[in-house]
Image (cartoon, rainbow, N blue to C red; front, side, top):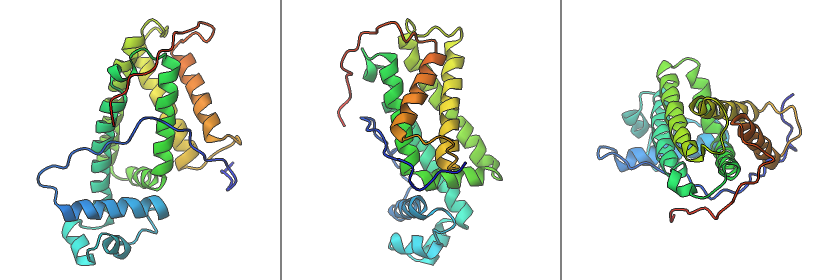
Length: 235
């Protein structure tokens, strides 16, 4: 059943933030503006409705300027995907750093991380849907996405390693990867494909995904965990 327009999409707040990877020296200001304009329009209208003329105008450039940077819209999507993956890696380095969560219970870590993923999927829904669509026919996007998944899985596994006393799954590294795949797959289904069989708010979605992930890891819900205020890096 498709999602209705009345579905509650209020996203739970998160202290985590999206990080932009440093631009390479060869990245010019005009290209950065073009990618930013394309990302904003695709997020708002979707890839099919984000025309080249509108993207160029939003970037204070011209159609000729667009084609000097990209061979076509597919080339633009490739550049956007490269930028997204670089930013996602930089974000993971900060968000999943073990020292950030020193003293936090695993349920709290998972809840905030999942809430942040929901926020990303909501804010970049159109962009992520464009990547999904192009990945069906573009092997390079599929490969880059897989590399990003492995990177996120390794960072999450390293974080969960600091909570070994709470994790009772026989293979914690596998559990981290499969739990992440379960979470991202659910968000792809509910947000990108807009397939929502249950009338569930984003707050409820975060709660249920957190419960599913934590129990899959073997976290005992009946065992009290000491919760200490999380030490966060300054923004």
